[in-house]
Length: 352
Image (cartoon, rainbow, N blue to C red):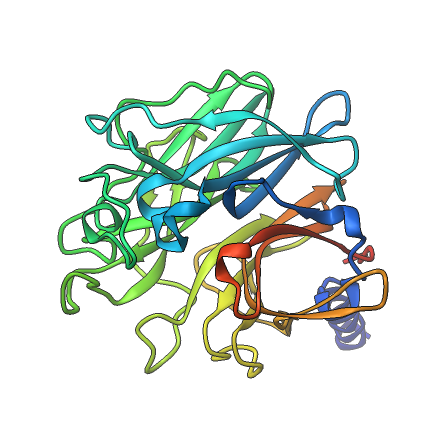
């Protein structure tokens, strides 16, 4: 009888676990025309959203002058702010949340990779900042890239004003996975208290100026503003690849942590460049989810048309009542990198 009881409990636990598996390939819905945000005169990248107390949606995104070309993201990006009544838009530009503030500051010439979240009664805008010689180039400006650090700005409302710190939240540690530079922060609250961050880290073992390998590091803190303690083992790695993934977005679901990442070459999805889903019981050890593929580079519009993209990156979710409702991504049409936009992809509700 006792053995039978434990067998039933095990089966029930397995069934509940199966119910908790997201399948984004089935959740993704066609995109309405309103859910494409562009900013005239600027190249648009990234895109992260939070609702305020009145229900308005605040989009924080990266932008830089179109005339400077795509690679000026590393020298001239600024985190801007747009607002909509509906998470699927249309969004209207309001102001620049994190403007340039002088090359003497650690984040004085570039702010990028925004990730906004509300903890308690405060709003936290995590981001990458850098400084350097300020020169936009037709290729990557390495003086800026290798000065990338992670910061957080704090505000009482998404409308700001945002208070920025004089020092980075996280900086490189000599001899560690992030010895050269770091970026792409994503933070969620832990169910047992405290906060968990995953960020992109670039080591200094590879040939300069690129360095590498490029991996991801987990860090924990008792406060949203740190200090964060770095964990020793890198995550989202793939054997034989020195740069398997980037752009993590993490959250805690009903029973575990989840992450959507950019899969550079299909190491995890077997679908070429794509978005992949990972899961973790503790936030420290990650594995590809049962339904690993989130999306390919094919975008389906509500008018029935399909669009082939050259880029679908920087995934961020709007979570409503703890469930993913809209997937925000930076997108660029095939062959038109400078025509990038933020796309808001509606999701059919899953009930894990």
